[in-house]
Image (cartoon, rainbow, N blue to C red; front, side, top):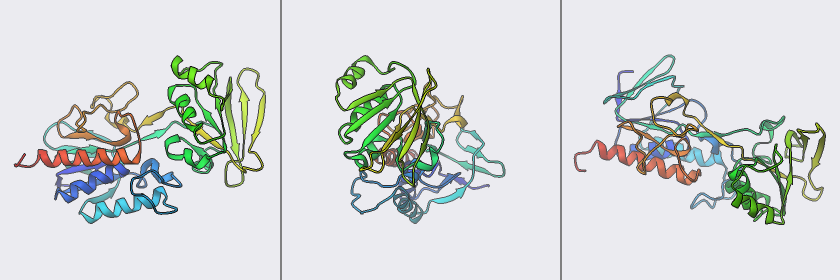
Amino acid sequence: MSKIYDVIILGAGPAGLAAGLYAGRSRLSTLIIEKGQDGGQIAITDEIENYPGQIVEGESGPSLIARMTQQAEKFGAERVSDTIKEVQLEGDVKVLKSEKNEYQGKNVIIATGAYSRPIGCKGEAEFMGKGVSYCATCDANFFEDFEVYVVGGGDSAVEEAMYLTKFARKVTIIHRRNELRAAKSIQEKAFANPKIDFFWDSVVEEVYGDDILQGMIVKNVKTGETRKVEADPEDGMFGLFGFIGTVPNSKLFEGIIDMDERGYIKTDEDMHTNIPGVYAVGDVRIKSLRQVVTAAADGAIAAVQVERSMSDYF
């Protein structure tokens, strides 16, 4: 492709679509490249309750993303479905190559997102959004007065377990070791919480149910013994939250862009990376809260920074 875009956005989740909307409204020639379906992690979220102004009953991740996509396209953002294999980000014109195409842009906004590290049990994918979750902030409210189980033993797992006690009547932490890895101060709070119980030396082998999560098999890694955990008959289901880390989609940029040891991209508060004209937004960058609202904000900030860098009046 010979056209040189003002900005190319990699990824069409909330961060990428917000960037596309703001860039398009600023009359920048904009291309959004997405290899899969729009929405990123939000595309598999059954209900949305915590996006500001969101009062539509039955709003889902896909329905919110569909409107974001329409909005970005309304303001002129072009779209292409492709998988980028190689990037050349130095210089005034950035080059992004797929197997068959080459795209050129004066600026690049990386909005490739991250994905939750899976629990790794049989049936997990089938029950995502139907009892299996990876985000307490997103889904805790749906388990009001239910039993929930949390897989993990680090800071985030224990903190999320404590957060879930505000909603669930009982929270059980399932950890493959006989002690937590979380900071001692966090552990002390968890041990003092009467709603929190523990399955030590244990992993989830399998989850099952009739369209919603109703049971699981938990294995003791030391003894090999397995036990069945089934939902209270009155509840009809329970929640299973995995907090064993997230993985950023940043492999393409390894050795090119500055990252932390886990692969999250380093930016300043205006989304600049260490390379001029290259920005990172949303879940792929280092940040304290990964939510739709913060991703959208990141995208808006990056697009405005691009516009300002190309304008004479700033």
